[in-house]
Length: 248
Image (tube, rainbow, N blue to C red; front, side, top):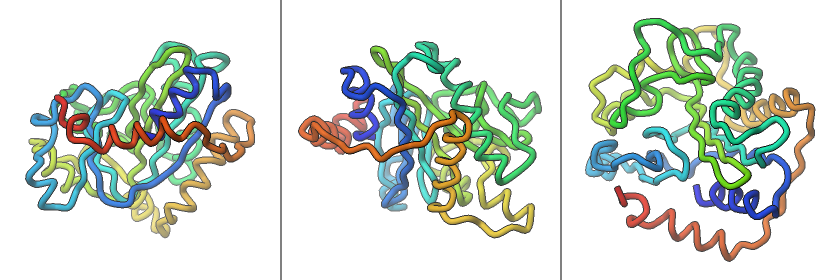
């Protein structure tokens, strides 16, 4: 979270003048809260500690996400060219690349939210994967990729979670959700089992995701060398603190 926040600041300051794609994983199971969420409503802290699940707060909006055995992406970019200062526009542009990636696993992928009865009205107390928003990736009535965004001064940050293995029961317990979340989310594991295919490693999935962005935007990514790490160190301290995570 701290590194993505730092990248957005670099874009705001003009130190980074082109889109950045970051793909990463998590050392331990971690539940991330949306920037505006109330922690006491969104997560059972005692149960999280018992289950060995860390809790962090994102700089982006949205609702709770459990990051465990998944591929996480972030896009940080100036608001020019393909990208604008409208959140919905940026979701739509990035969704094209996410759809290319997802269709390498399943032909039943859609970008528009389904109209089926399984979709529920978003609520601050429900987790991200309990509903599908415009330009999110779904297979049938179930969400495959959950994303959230933050607009900055002349730039934006979008996070996304691509669960590889199904952890809907753990997410349901952690967020005290009254819903059977297995009816609302679909994972890489679920899709591969239905097709009788082997489950790709997170490394293979990360490579496919990068290739999908390169194909969609007709670009070739180069590794970014980080500078100005003093500010990054400060942000890492901030994001690790209870005063930030549980400030609401």
